[in-house]
Image (cartoon, rainbow, N blue to C red; front, top):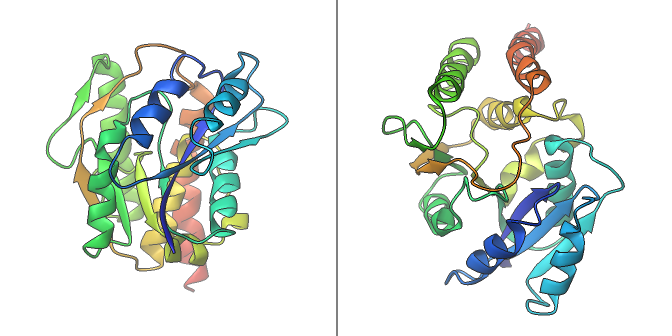
Length: 240
């Protein structure tokens, strides 16, 4: 069985995508990469197509018709990966906020017993570079809030740098994933937690993007705040 595929969702990431693919392809673990592009007007998909000539057996591209949200891009990528013989599936941003050099650490954690490993900003303090204080506080206390509501013992509940063993994605009902933004990351962890999978946090240093534009918005934050409560209520009702 092929080992690992890294799913990278993109929208207007032409300034970052070539570099992050090149670095990922240079790693000794021979990761494959799937870019899920939401029809970026800046030509991101065309650049990926040109790179496929350099990495014809390891770089793949799926282009969707329009921007539909982070969560749906990942679910699209998960389904694509599950149709192929990958043992591990990774989430990673295109903007180098997640360092691809940390991918082997996440893989190692799963090889040593984790079902899901999380690149965590908060498991050994606050390891965030180039974020303003208000953004750090928002992210940190969002995780505190999520832990309180859900009872998950995860320090970085909103992290988006993740390795899943294949079995985790096979057991999570991907067609029932509700959220498309910030709350998607919480929902995936919560569903894995509810299924009793072993979740391990791996300390990383998170560095905010230096080029391109952030996709964060007030609507995404509101989805996370209210979505967590609905997830918890639904779980409790299912156990009655």
